[in-house]
Image 1: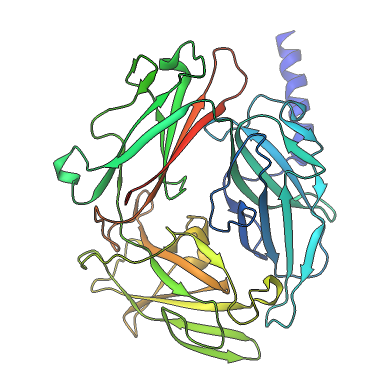
Image 2 (image 1 turned 135 degrees about the vertical axis):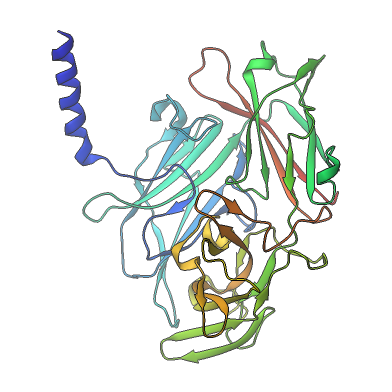
Length: 419
């Protein structure tokens, strides 16, 4: 009987395999023709995709398809646990409406060097709304003939039931006092009953809304009355970094900050950026950045989304020593904080510099360089870390009640290192 059950299970699995579609439950892009993917609050282009349950707020997804034309893109909401695995819920448990609806708002580019079609989706909408808090994946796929993954984006829905109180402090470890920033925080659950806070509450700490460097599985140390305390020593700190490198690509008529020269021809626009240097030993300077994010704007056409051009941004980095056993990448929100192949610098032995060219839409961009050793990434070696750097921190409080089938997101706090 056992062998028969195993055979039937294997047969069912083999039937399901051809229909499976591979995509990641993270921020990612799967088609080379998909560019400039953004997910944020409507009217707040640099905001994080975190929204209160039943708040009336809406998130806006936008992206460009450089192949142009009319492509049918559909979307699906997937509820996840606190570790970004699919939750045990069925769709009917967490959505009101229907998945796999078509993205209907699309616009052709006008008068640009690169033709593209611009797509927009606002959620929730008349077709779909979420009914539970927690982590969600917005999955977009091409549906011309077969389901082809196009992009995925994380977002979080919060039901504010507890109060998260925190501040950015100097590290307790004196060896990190000039290079790191530490978080001190507690959760007050005065207005929400938690039967076993030591085992049912878990936090996630994020710097500048980055999941690749997030501190996860943050558990309580003890409970003091109505406060859940997390005051461990030398456990909740982040390298401070420095202010991000910036480049202003908002105009193809004049050179913005960080642009050395530009060349316009019938095939497009090339912008040569000023050559970058290793900043590890450089003095710290404070200036306004957007914490690794980017803002799509055109200074040439009244910020018209479909009149914005794409430019070839040429990055160059000069180093005293060549790194033969490591790779260097340009990273930031422009790459989803991933090591994109187009963002990988190549060593030009003739000029003695590292270079790459990245296709970017007109806008204002933050970026930095990272060294990839294969099994380890070093964000500080080319940028340096200084305790006075301005960073934004987010503390997410997840609640998993005993016997529950999903993780609820019941509170958050946003902190700034300069406040």
